[in-house]
Length: 208
Image 1 (spheres, rainbow, N blue to C red):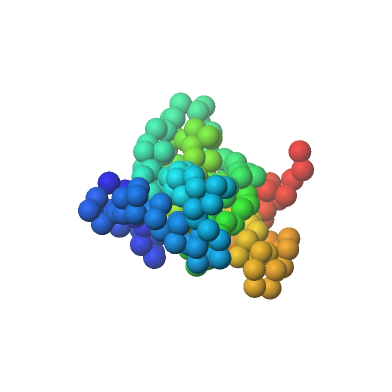
Image 2 (cartoon, one colour):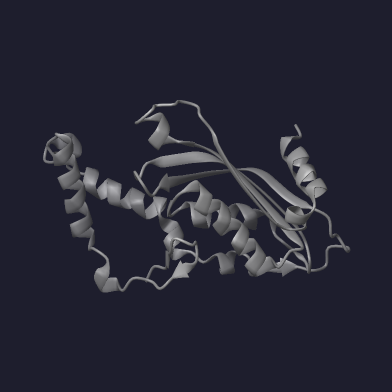
């Protein structure tokens, strides 16, 4: 049974299995969209497309079945007293806009000031994946990531910045190819002290 996320980014009650369409119903919906687009879903090149699309959707939206609490559950306390910034930058991600269901692709930068241990650095990339593999808007994705950090790591401060290109803007509408959208959120020490924000930006922008 898959968990869902409400408009505030909180995990909502999962849908019952009865409310989820069957594989056959999902494939029939893809055939309907192919026909609506003006093509013949029964021609040779499209016969297996519905099965491929539903399989791809299972990958695109795998985050609904994943729990951020599990990703951040294991922390390490024996780190030699380290209590300075932990930053993982340039984490690649891809998600799907919940308004048009087309991709937005970019990179995430995540930093936190440890309070009682650190989490494995690969887990920060995994956290991004959990939330990005859901129907999203970039603003909500930014909030979900930092809220999960605060809830499960209880850091002295956290900072998250996302940079992404949205296909709903570059492939349709104004077709602004190469336009980048930046969102950011700070909590704790990062929100209270501008010097820490400046240090975060300097570390993100540092080359090499």
